[in-house]
Length: 262
Ligand code: ATP
Image (cartoon, rainbow, N blue to C red):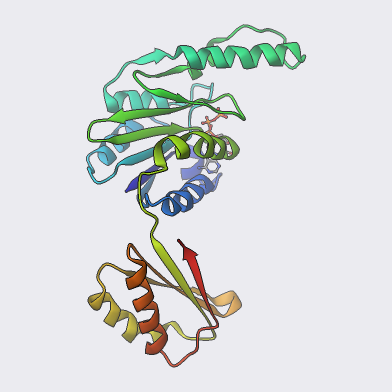
């Protein structure tokens, strides 16, 4: 299982919508490492550390992702919080520092910066909890980091800017840490038109006890007068059996049946 911690007062105050967690949840689910919980925490070192510690107590969470707050300004405190939680010192990461310096040289040569010096703000971005593996950010400055933890578990720290988070996840995290981490769940959707949710109560109740390993969810879209019944589980065979039971258990015909995965 995985879990996502989003860091940022901007999320808590309602200025920014947490689309990163939404995107990550979809990818992690598809990779067979579904998200068991998400938490949003403000930009305070103690709170970030406490939240990370809490999630690390969950031994069934093998992949913990901490997102946002890696920037050059003093209100970006995620690495400090993670260092506190892992009880590791903050150290200057030489490969990250070198990468930042190269970017600054390029910017200076292109006339986008006046000085090629790595300033305090840049140096801050390269101060990360010790003994991590940098995750290259091909589209921005903020580095991502991976930390191997006892029991074959990993903690990842990713930037908050969506395109940077997407790039690091796709180019570094997924191929290096998630490729063989889990098995993709089987998901099938039944889509109904003008069928009331209440009609599904008896059959959903029945499959809930007959198939405890299979989850059945009902998701109405009142605007389009549509209803999606989503069936998911580890066994493709058993998901199929539940789909057939649901179909047979209501007097409304399904308009469409869609295999979402695998
Ligand atoms: P940077 O180095 O670019 O500052 P960062 O890790 O510090 O990266 P944040 O300061 O947390 O990133 O956020 C930068 C911007 O990214 C925010 O202003 C916001 O627009 C966007 N952002 C941050 N977190 C999220 C999120 N969870 N979902 C969507 N957008 C986000």
